[in-house]
Length: 340
Image 1 (spheres, rainbow, N blue to C red):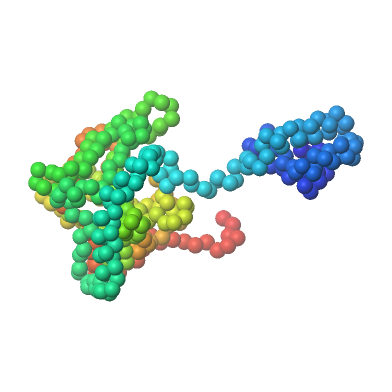
Image 2 (tube, rainbow, N blue to C red):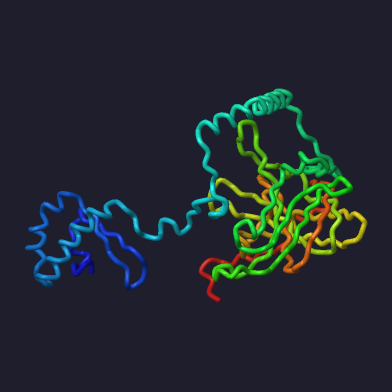
């Protein structure tokens, strides 16, 4: 029933949509002008259920259609659609056209030099040969310009906690990821859990800000040389793709530090990383697409209210000839129409 009129009795040029869900949803109608011209004939044709009810219903249809015409109110349209890559965090800064032109002209020389190097590499056609046992350092944190390739975020940035962190140079001249972790929850009645600090590398880009990927398909192990404080951290490898359903795909594995004054060399096979999305471990796991790596991050969130300190020398990828495992987690695929 739509406003007292059975749905099957409505003409074909009168379409309906619903606002809300459940038995209390409101039905709005959208009609063309031709249907309004024949509204009197429609009244005379369907007066049998209830004269007063049908008359009021048609008046409501004509009044509501003018105010909400061509507006979709069904929640299906945004059920699986992500509006923003960051999930609503970190709004875009507004700049005037003059400021954008000035900033673009400042970067033009550097982008042209980068494009020139890309053209030179294209014509040289020098293939990258990787032999077993080779290691390639992707990030070496020894200078201030190396720290510009990393971004640090925490719950305090979004008023969702009281943790803080930063990436600086240590007195020994290495990258230092440090801060203070706090699980205290703000008293706003919305946030239920808090306590994380994350450092993440910037996405690789070609000349003129074109997005690209890191290709680690010839390697099978992640190598880090770090000096920690005995706490556990989480390594995150992002493989965000083009479609919004893959924007939050992150492969993670734990990094255990032993503390003390000595450096430790940690090698983690890529086959050990597990898939998660928006902080939830996925039931259907798969291996990392190593040819589409977007960024790498390290998170501190072990629920210990205390300062943390992780000194990083370099982060690289390693080709281990003795490691042949492709994926560490066995998945069971049930047959179709299986009842359990």
